[in-house]
Length: 169
Image (cartoon, rainbow, N blue to C red):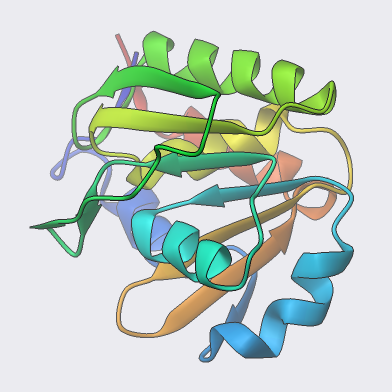
């Protein structure tokens, strides 16, 4: 398990608060790139909602049923492939990491996957960057600022550097 300690990992936490990719204040401004993605991963409930509202199902969607710490229920009844993972706030558990790996493998074969996290999905972007195939587009929300869109090919080294700053348990 990888864990962030607010006292020991201040530099990493500060870096994670900055967008890892391009920031789009309006979701619609990124639609052309999103719809042209070969492989698409979304992390976060608001991002997943925006995709669904535009009739786009990501190859892998990661949600925790919270939007800015408030409960949010998604209608997942029409989705066949729902995986579950446990991941407390401020961590990346082996369970989440393995579930992301499994979901990417399955989605790569054509079956869209949704991971419902019991806990928090905020740090799931890092394993997604490290595991996903080259040229995968990852989307996540930057609270009160907009949508972050990144290409994993450009960020594998940065994601590993950030992960190296976590406490490994």
